[in-house]
Image (cartoon, rainbow, N blue to C red; front, side, top):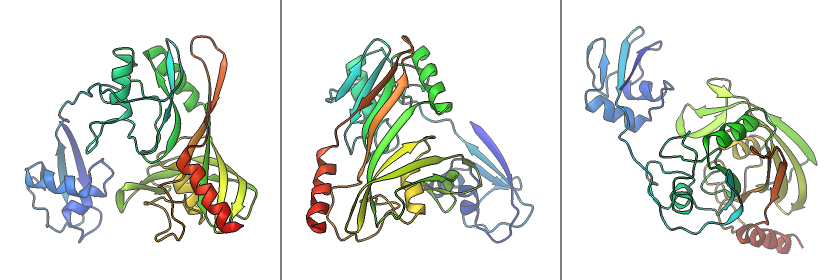
Length: 305
């Protein structure tokens, strides 16, 4: 069990909202659950979720340890671009979750990897994320690397930390990007008003750098290439939205009621490059744009003709 002691600095806020905004990894609905189960005390007494706080109030939040869950092997087809004794490079389809989490415990990339690799996966990230060195969103397609042992995992993670790991994406974004190329250097952290979203913020954030360049312009949209220096959650989606050019089909950060029909979020991890942990050789892999992406480009060409 993890216990957090919080001190209220602003009168009038509801207890459940205060806990959700406290950056201790608890959503508002989870805060309500903790309060109702007796896991929250206010000034030493059992709390009520509707209580309004006063400046100086002491809130103790006891978060129970997570119930152990072990991902299970599933016979799910994988598009393996490269494999050896130390790692795999996988081309993930759009719509596949990378690792099990609440609401998505089956049908994930990890379930498929456990079936394909058996026990030959790094254990650094535990039973829910075996072998996962980095991840891409459910609705993003493309290449990612998987470590088969702990030594490879540490070596590859070190390259990501040092920004020597090549990650190149292609995307279609809303609107006409004026500059042919540019860089967004803006820190990313959790959105304080919606824990499921990220945002550009100076509070509890991490450095995030995205370089972008224009591939082609169409009526109302731009096809771009993005090269990442860092790999924060939703980085490209947040950075491009901050420029007024959100990723086409992005239901979280995008433009509502887009006029062009699309087949989901148009973002693809196209290229990946790294130094091999065993051989020391630099390896680079490039994937073809998937059908949904090419179909969307065809629609844009027809509209722009």
